[in-house]
Image 1: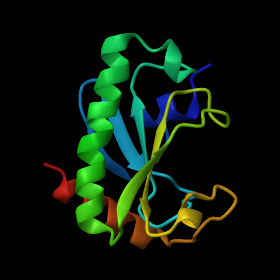
Image 2: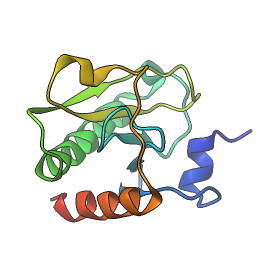
Image 3: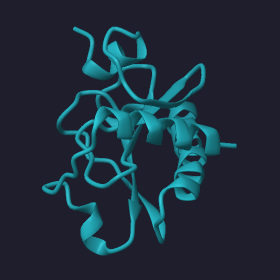
Length: 130
């Protein structure tokens, strides 16, 4: 059975897309820890990040780096943090989150945003990616 992320890539489930290449996809997390929380995934469905082949592993991180640079331009932050947890969804994903203090990387805290706020933010980030 396809993961929820594979269904997002296939267009079966809507998302707030930030960027896409032939191998990778980035979209806003719908349950964000902080405003600007982005998920970067390979289109290939693999559960565990260290099971990715080397080319995909490196490519995903280079893709995430590109997204993080655009994210930093849009979301006021000191740095963009990266986390790989991989427990909730059996599909490799990198969390990118604007950080201003250590507590910003707390997965037990979430912020609420309206669909208009998500849509606007996704478009701003997409436009800021080189």
